[in-house]
Image 1 (cartoon, one colour):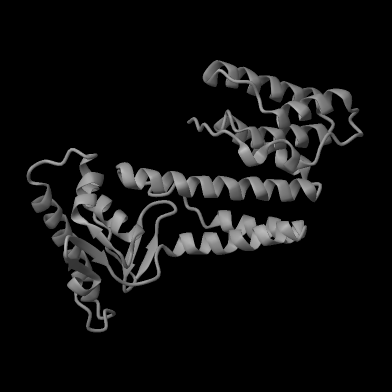
Image 2 (image 1 turned 60 degrees about the horizontal axis):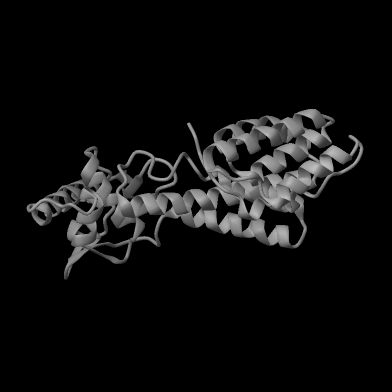
Length: 277
């Protein structure tokens, strides 16, 4: 079984897709795929589907969605690649719930975590070229937001947010590695888009300011700080963190030829997040 969730949901049995077109059965499959090999209680599926307010017919309706999924699995197995398995083997009924069997979980999540882990180890060893390469490979695994085409209730929304936080941290580290390799000019276009998308993310703004300053665009770096400060005060009622404030003062005092700070020194580890668009 192949399972991919970093983008549109893609679950394949014998190379054939078993993802339903209807939103709620797709939601059931996504939650089962997320916890492949584990029993997912029917009550949890109902909570996901109806946001904690299931109808009286919830259990019967969940059973209907499971039957629909098994029909898709049956068709895939009928291609001759199922090696004697049945749809009930792949999507089993267990006491109190259902279990999706096969594979070791979401293949793309495992690959992302493997490559990102190699990148973090390279960062710790100060091998910034290897770190940038591995983290870029990890980020390339993503095909879009997690569960991009799946309605998300409470459970899937939390998982999607967790995965997005992991992606954003990998992105932060890849940019930091690139900055340490002196690629500041090449980063400006990418960071311009990122700071517009994540308008209160202090880590990305600090990296943007450093890239601008090192490219001889000191005034624009200071303007970026002022825009962030205005956004934080207006939307969150708070001032930038001390790390970012120190970076702003360092740029004010430094000439274009001086380095204001290393990339990781401006508070990127505790950046506040707010995505727009």
